[in-house]
Amino acid sequence: MPSSAALREPLVEGAIIAGRYTLLRMLGEGGMGSVWVARHHALGVDVAIKFVSAELAARDDIRGRFEREAKAAAKIQSPHVVKMIDHGVDQGDRLFIAMELLEGEDLSTRLEREPRLPLGDVAFVLRDAAKGLGKAHSVGIVHRDVKPDNLFLCRDDDGFVVKVLDFGVARELVPAHEAAFRTGTGALVGTPAFMSPEQALGGRTIDARSDLFSLAVVAYRAVTGRVPFARDGLGETIMAIAADAAPPPSTLRPDEGPALDAWFSRALAKAPEQRHATARELAEEFAGACRAARLAGSRAEHRGPAAPGRGPRLPPPHPQAGTGACQPGA
Image 1 (tube, rainbow, N blue to C red):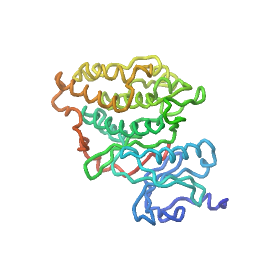
Image 2 (cartoon, one colour):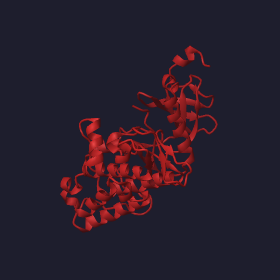
Image 3 (cartoon, rainbow, N blue to C red):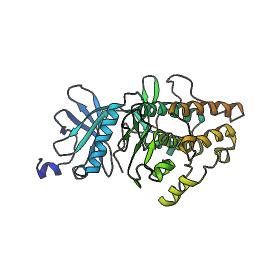
Image 4 (cartoon, rainbow, N blue to C red):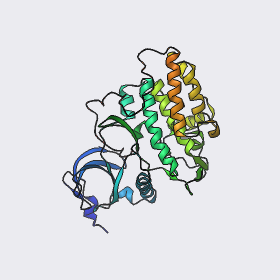
């Protein structure tokens, strides 16, 4: 057991973590802990380290969430999912996960600056996010918290790639080839405004189609500038998700036309069996709806769906955007 002094010792620049990392600078701090840039001694590269405070690490639910995040990220091998390098407990009894260090910004930050994105940019985000989620689903993992904060617009040598972050509330299917997992009745896990109806109602059976509903809510937010079901209170939001139809995007952006309305009608269907079956299908049909919208006369500045390959569509991150790999927690 670490001493009480060790438990109280703050994280500072230059601190050695687990004998193999040196902290360089803090990236962010939240209610659950903090995220730092650190140098990996053996590899000689910078990584992002996510910490949970010792006080929270003593809670079984928090420890379980961190272990799930580490295991899920390690199991999913995809260029569209943040790469997990290491995890453990430091000398101050803080849980930590070391991940690849990403340059760029999350989609939430981009949407704060540019509330409505061109259709080509949305198609680019969906294409990459669908690849990451599709890989997770293929190995039996459902994310359960797909939202703009957890989609990172990352710069790389070829332009941009979108990576899915934070599998802390993910659940694994057992066995992996089954279509769903079961959770406790009444359990509410995730971010309400982006939840599927079955997730918002605490359903006992959740499968990959719940993530696809959430990704469609992300697309709706990026296309229209608003989320479809958010209300003033949690109860009202849950009831809207469960019972209300999303306003067709054309009522908010008349220039987009009926093709996108039809796509969102299917993607945001209340019944999972009425939605797209896979992440790939969801992204490909969105690209087709974008092409139809252009042919129907959408505005000239809409650039259409992203071209095949990894070419950049999104503009560079804002000069003040930070470098990071995950959210420290609220």
